[in-house]
Length: 368
Image: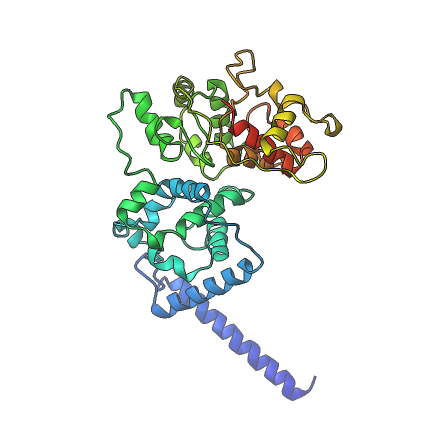
């Protein structure tokens, strides 16, 4: 190393040391404000640039599913009112006062959502944003729930106040609650599951479900054994006596009729070309698939009253096909927990193909 180079290195180290001392002195002096009173413009601009570039890079490999599916939008709408609206506001009302005093304050999504692609919104909802109040989704393996929120958020710019209230059930007129139990059910459950717990689409019916199964499900959600960023926080907020009371309440309600039957879906291939999806599902439900080590579904999930079946097993007849198919897929991918018998369902769902799971779901959706 030449003498000139050594002098340059020493000079550089001296300047770096001086800069470090100055930075440490400024930080240690306490002159940098931390009050939530806003950023300097240059700080806001820099942070926004970093955020947009970071999200764009990580969202680039993602591909959004069909976000126009009504049941996906409905599920996102139900969660938005409880999980997002307190910070981001809603159509027809100004941004809430407290979030407006946060730094940075949560954006008005009606105005800001157009800045982001569906994939970028997914990344933001799933992972949250550091140094803000935006949390990551509670469970990283529930992308289906995250996409539901994205599907609804993308609709916000086109909604006015009344439309928002219709989509989130805020505008549903109901008579006065007949009891404390009914009032608790409305506050905890009906935003998503509808009046009387009748459910629809990706939101399951609660009315007429077995009380033991409902209690086991809520306990599993609360403990994290059954992972859901939508149901987990709700279940965790309930006391043990409330869980038992709600389970008994919904078990006593009359269940709804089956979902509207789907148009017959004819199968291709020589052996199955004359069979509909429902007929193939009925065959699996009645006899299973011995060649795949899959038992008959009806052993645990018969249609009708079936009073002798274990009360910890859910009634699935009449549930929406898309909900049943999703649960089977989550079981097959080891992303679905539940009560004490969840392990049995993981083995069954893993033994079925994706197409067979859809057939079974279509069959049960058409049954009482």
